[in-house]
Image (cartoon, rainbow, N blue to C red):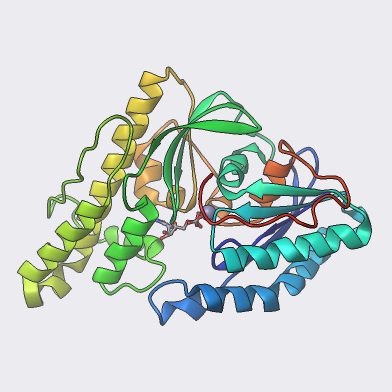
Length: 320
Ligand code: KG4
Ligand code: ZN
């Protein structure tokens, strides 16, 4: 079995996955409540909490799988991108476990992990396919030809889609993290009530900073009325982001002649996006937001460093 560890942002996660891609345990401890009062993730607070949680979360994953460290053949861990202090906690824990047991260690790229969330379970998505990766940190269109990697064909020139959801939620007073809150509130609203145009950029890229500013101005115009129109605002805002994602994803699939389309990352949990891109393969809900099963999954196809050639491995903050 592969033990996966993920600590790139505010989720402390551990999972056990077999070489065939079967999930035996998938534990995610979210720190969202801890960061909510600050309106976003505070890196130093996240690192300290990961330090407290990483061992108990690994223990819990082993217990859930009915396994011990004797059953672990490889330790997989997120190396980047993410918050460096947070990443270092998981990386150090993984090195310590692997080294103490004489095991190989698989350093995993978090974004490859999101794509590899599609390779788990009984009916995995098989390459080639066009993948939309939409999370809090990234919005990418990926040409996926093989399990081991991908080619980036589109990206956001400014904010990520998840970031747009989070910033919009903040403006609407919905707290952090905001994507799921907007999704819920939007169900009671009229998506055609307001028009929030999303800037079109060239090629297959995205831009989401303008839509957030449009919401800010609309709220200013509405003044006291804004509170009563919150559901309509959420629905219209969500519609704008989803439309932009759907349009560019379809264009990319057509341009690259991909018949199969897949969607991964936290924003893939969005109910309107799931309805709008009918026929696309969405990662299962539990595997959309950050988790360690996807990290263990990616390790099945990536490089594995033999014992003890990983002790000097470092974390990286941004996409290589
Ligand atoms: O993949 P993820 O867990 O972390 C990163 O790697 O960034 O994605 C988190 C993002 C957050 O921005 C969150 O607001 C968004 O995913 N998200 C959603 C929904 N659930 C989570 N956005 C829209 N609708 C949702 N239901
Ligand atoms: Zn992520």
